[in-house]
Length: 446
Ligand SMILES: NC(=O)c1ccc[n+]([C@@H]2O[C@H](COP(=O)([O-])OP(=O)(O)OC[C@H]3O[C@@H](n4cnc5c(N)ncnc54)[C@H](O)[C@@H]3O)[C@@H](O)[C@H]2O)c1
Ligand SMILES: O=c1ccn([C@@H]2O[C@H](COP(=O)(O)OP(=O)(O)O[C@H]3O[C@H](CO)[C@@H](O)[C@H](O)[C@H]3O)[C@@H](O)[C@H]2O)c(=O)[nH]1
Image 1: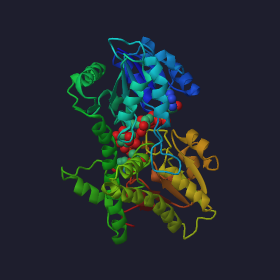
Image 2: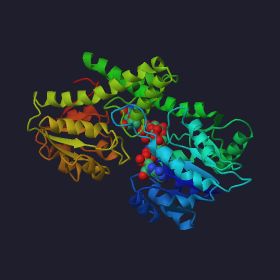
Image 3: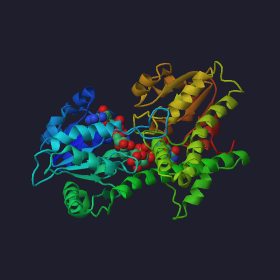
Image 4: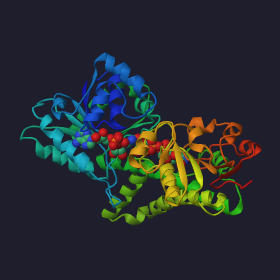
């Protein structure tokens, strides 16, 4: 099937490559010429495991191309909208200008499809009500007698696992219009996803509003689970108890489960923080703000973790950060990604620097992005360089490379063997045995 993907960022570039891998003929469109140039040359514009290999494979088939010219989507049967929906500056609400611009730009390309109307499929995360509004926008933009369809098909991929999550998702959700239009839209989506559906991937078909809500509900639940365990970490810290043992113990209960109970610096990235805030804002507009007041607490607990990490650093540096050499391991919001949007690691690094620390940051993939946004921070080109002569080392993003560090070897580089494990990723006993002062949020002081 001929498919277009509008917006080729972390979501869209992966989606385009995966759709081509499923056998479709795909054109990816983005307004960023630099991104399109890289993608057109078969290069991933960001770090995502498996994407470079997939791009190489599908570009060779000739089924995938990229352009900045929206006119090239004409003739596609299905158009996926994958543009950004960031938090509005100074507000909680989502900024929908990119989604609106993408759909407005798309409408003229939907004309003249006659008996086989094109299908616009929203994948971006949007406030409930957006799909219905966009369906009207599409209908109003077409001449009398012409018709196009709209469906909402939220995306649940995780960065770092984006390719496998797209090709083999936990489930598909289709938000469909009522009546025969809904049936046609479903048939088209079933054709797009025929391969993963054939392996038994669960499918939930529903209305627009429910589909939109599924996405923000899922992210709210995940954020709540993380903040729950971080709230337990706050209490553990008061009584010198161990939040990791606590998470293991409650996680054995199948009703609770161990996933997303990793306490530490909390959640960041381009999704969970802005999605729970946009959900609260939308609930407020709908007169349902009381239903989501708990999400404000979830957000507050999360942001307190960053503050507590700064305090803990000051504590182990005998009460002052001034002039202390601080080696920070990690800049990305999570391992296996170069994404630094709302990164807890960089937030902590920047606060430490503001308070007079001499901070050097290293990350295996995110240094370039971090330097662009935080030009005042100092960056090392290896873990060794970041921790050279350090008074304290902070592990803030749990890359494998950092988990595997040998405390004996690292100990020869630093001025003081002090490590703060912001992700509960190291073995305290091993580091202590090598003469390190090991501290972590919500773990016994030792
Ligand atoms: N990143 C994820 O893991 C993920 C997962 C699920 C859902 N989402 C949702 O998907 C959406 C996109 O997120 P992202 O992380 O890919 O963002 P992103 O910023 O990486 O990518 C958005 C892309 O859209 C492009 N764009 C903006 N306006 C455009 C237009 N009018 N026409 C064509 N391209 C345009 C931008 O240049 C950019 O490349 C968001 O709503 C996000 O919440 C993201
Ligand atoms: O137990 C945990 C799990 C995660 N995190 C942090 O939470 C953040 C988000 O992690 P994760 O959810 O794995 O990454 P994302 O790629 O942002 O994916 C989330 O956001 C996407 C965009 O909406 C959704 O598609 C995914 O389903 C959802 O997991 C990161 O900062 C993690 O370090 C924790 O602190 N503790």
